[in-house]
Amino acid sequence: MDQLPIFVTLKGRKVILLGSGEMADAKRRLYGRAGAVLTDDEQADAALAVVALEDDDEAAAAVKRLKARGLLVNAVDRSALCDYTTPAIIDRQPVLIAIGTGGASAGLAKAVRQRLEQILPANLGKLAQALFAARERIKRVWPEGADRRKAIDAALDPGGPLDVLTDRTGADVETWLAMPHAERLSAVVELELNSTDPDELTIRQARLLGQADQIFAADDVPAALLDRARADAERFSLSLWDEQPVTGLTLRIRMKT
Image 1 (cartoon, rainbow, N blue to C red):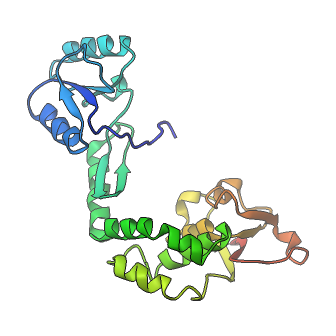
Image 2 (spheres, rainbow, N blue to C red):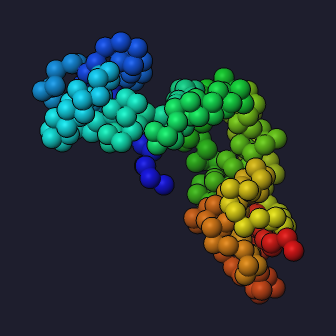
């Protein structure tokens, strides 16, 4: 990972924007949506700076001046000069999904965004707001953190009462909380992997790794694959299967021979 994706609160904060024309207008709209106060004063007390100048030499000189002041600078279409890049964004307020390529290809990021836009329901933000509003009730229903995590995972799971890829709203959250003793995800699942490449995990395999409480892996399963699991999941060698108590969602993982 060459960049750290972060979400910055810019509402009411100054951002320097240098340039005019199509590139600058696009950045002006983007930062304006985030509530930033845009200025072309290079000496302004700003949080960030954007250079959208057409001329290469002028842009490089402006970037140098701004960086000398200690600002983080985005140089439009000049990734080598950037301290940060702006991703393609899916906005389901308050859910924001950012797709970046480190400046390698804005077109690729846009294509991925467009594909995901077709998959993610319009009500995803409303579901997030409803879960936030219900957080104290959720804590009362499941006082223990581990139980609460399992219940939420099961609810958001494909086919669950709050499946994130279907249109869900506050009413669905109310229905879920009215049935606090619904069946929780608890099982032993066998995973037979076809490849040592973690990028070739199926969607189901990646989801199960993210939910598992325990993992029993054969010795030839690469660490890179197991890194896709939750950090707090218990991990054991498959040779210890008969010696360890099994609880929650447990995976037994082997490589396909």
